[in-house]
Image (cartoon, rainbow, N blue to C red; front, side):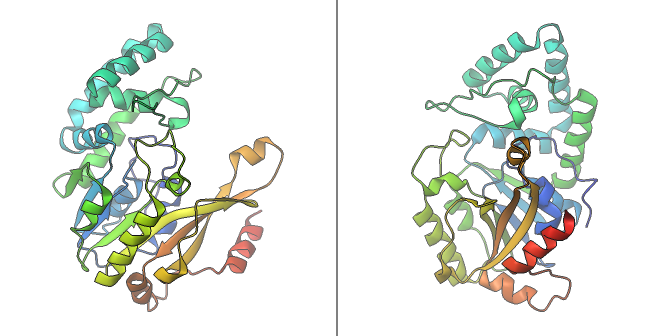
Length: 307
């Protein structure tokens, strides 16, 4: 599985880039179109394309500026790379005031080059929106963002793997799922906080738990193969609501490393992320000897061996 050569032009908090190799282990080897309805940084789609898993790709996100940026990266990579370089160099005299100006301009225009600059400069690559839907994250004043030459390589790399075989949309995830056939594969990483009713400033719109469960049940009835990254835990703290047993999903627990916050507090808590496989995908993979399946106890033993 190729991991080191996977391009990653959009730094996005919560990206599954570091777990991509583990997640791809559970992909079918026969995929017509890979759908990612909550694409974000599209880390899984890019990793799949690099590893030639899938003939076509469909990335979607309700964040329209993000999807406009992806369209620019895929279709006009040289142009967006040049625009980013111009912005990056203009910031050098006064990075903080320039960032504020770019943020204001982006909220007014939605331009893709401005968004890319903000993503490269904002704190921890963490997108934040106010109640009006405006980008309001602060800059990381300790760094200037990805250097233009590096960004250009990342953009050109992503375009190389995705151009000519990728559909980019910004619609409701359920509209995307209506297009899927049993020959395709779906990977979903929806916002966790849609389960609790509170607004999460990382997302323009949350995903309601009951609606999501209904969508998964519909996919099951159609025999659609899919994977879902949905909940997880760090130490004794859990994130997200467990998907119901009635969906008959196979749960895989993935080791995601030590918690950064716990490390700062002097603890050794590790983060576990859950990956759910649909019944049709689990049945298919049951005959593949290279697939790794961990029960909760086996996963904990694996972690203990890595200390």
